[in-house]
Image (cartoon, rainbow, N blue to C red):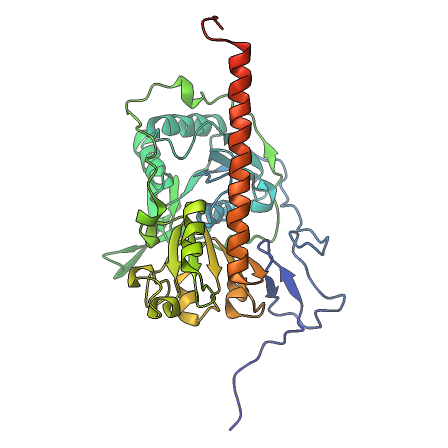
Length: 394
């Protein structure tokens, strides 16, 4: 019987993504070692760049607003920017208003104008200040549409507040969008509805592919028309973020996870590393079946599905079920003796080495770094005491 399964030629042209992963270019022919090889602008081995989106006589704006996390935008926010860039015509610029510090390459994301508000910290609850900032930005730029990622971490709430305060038309949980209309699910996903593009668009995750065939101008605008958050009175009392032991955080809610597999022989050292890192503990099914970890620590299709920003897998080969459980993690780091293990194909970074030796080295490095930091802090306090002895007014 003839095998009808189409095989992908591994010698076909490929690109290297920003995450360092090789992606075969569909629809192309030729060998990966020929002149036909295509590399992304982020690839470490190539110099090819995407063209800049052509804008002639700009007359209007598309505004995207989003919060950053540790100086970066998540995939959902990048998708909202991509939607605005794809909807923009030759006379429309894409502006991005970010709450928090941003270190990403905004031009590569498709942004033409950037307004950065570093003093609006995502960890601080200040919805009224953020609303006034968005209102001021919209008043200054007069955008055709305002787009935000519809999430539960501030952007979705901000978009709804803005629409309500300005009386703007709004569509939430948008799963489909084009130049004329948006589409949403209704009646518990039993029906699908469309409407003309509203003033405010809140995009559901994965409604738009974040990769763009072009780049933006990436220019910065001074946000002097927006008052700093510190100058605005808040009707709320922010009690701050309560720090708790990472081991008490459910795996589904953990942002940093270290996970052990069959390659981890010293569980005590692994748990010490988790404590030093301040990370939650996960495990593979094999490690759980061997009795090293309780069942609630199991990550995978038959365990917990996690969405951590950082997931470090020690001694985990990467069975299909385990990879299914970490598919939504942002950064995956694998530590394994086998550099060709399945986990390496999913990982953003693979350390080929012994898991126990790596764990010991990491513990030593972190403790050394923290010791140096404490010493520097103590020296600073000592210098301050010498400059201002007790009883002498500073």
